[in-house]
Image (cartoon, rainbow, N blue to C red):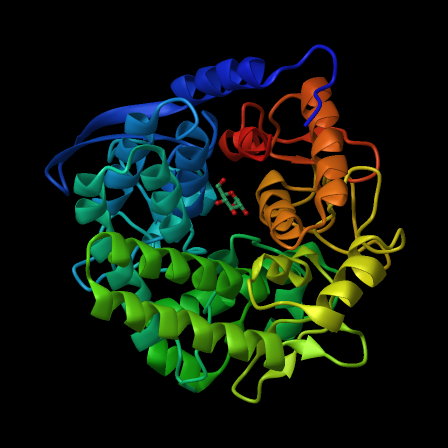
Length: 424
Ligand code: GLC
């Protein structure tokens, strides 16, 4: 696609390389008795290794340094539990003073130096992308089984009702921390920031008290969300795993994972579609109630192969392109414009930070744009990419952006905002 005058793909790649280099942390870890080296999301505050950020960094790296991409994934997998579980954060570097939230996250864990919750499983999609670049079967052999084991862990521990949809047990597992969907699920629909944080952390402490026994936590039903973005990514990554097993001549494993993906996809497409609002919603509680808040997660199922006909038409034309919902000058806002929770600006500094309550994030844009292209909406996709280019050229790689003005907010040189490169 066309570029704006001053910025080229090569240009962006050079900038991404600088960001990744300056965000790289390395050392020796005593608890794991191993060297570590990884790209942190930012060189301020976010100085640990996150699951889905790592996947996104590796996807970008596959465009200019595939070996580095592989190292990022292999370093993340060093933090995998023996049960197959992959944590959302690895707190490499034990001498580091932790910011207060990280201190809490690391304390309420039953696993040493990692969190006990996970994050959207983007790794399957990521290693397929890396594999497509150089067909390195040795890399596949080192990674596919491990990632497949994580998917099996999710199936064994997070699907009490056996419908194929995976449940999350904390808002932070969605990657979209304070998305208002979770307020409905956690039963606090008020607007007090402190109360909201308290509500979410209270659930996390309960999880800790139950030693992160997921089955028990889901039975107790105080926080149980079959979340749209998490499951869409689970389906896509499971399909990748299935295809990669074929590359390794493992037909049986390949069939197994295809079946898992089909099941989950069927459930998502039927159970999460609301006939009245004609949009997808996440489900919460053992009664599978719909959390009826329109957020960017409602658009993410666009990425699914099985989405078609009326549903895709309604999703794109009535919601994605609707100026009162998601079609802002710099799409796609994390919360639809006509929701009472929509707040496009940066949180004032005297308030506790709330993320994912209006601003546009590059990670979710990446998922939606890939979905639009998969289903042939190329002109819409290219239009959004152009707006992203303009925004990033002007503001740099920021953590998130104002969906109306494009103003960049919070951390600078933020790793995953380089995902724009993968869309060009
Ligand atoms: C924020 C985001 C989360 C991300 C993390 C590190 O917590 O909500 O998705 O993984 O920052 O960038």
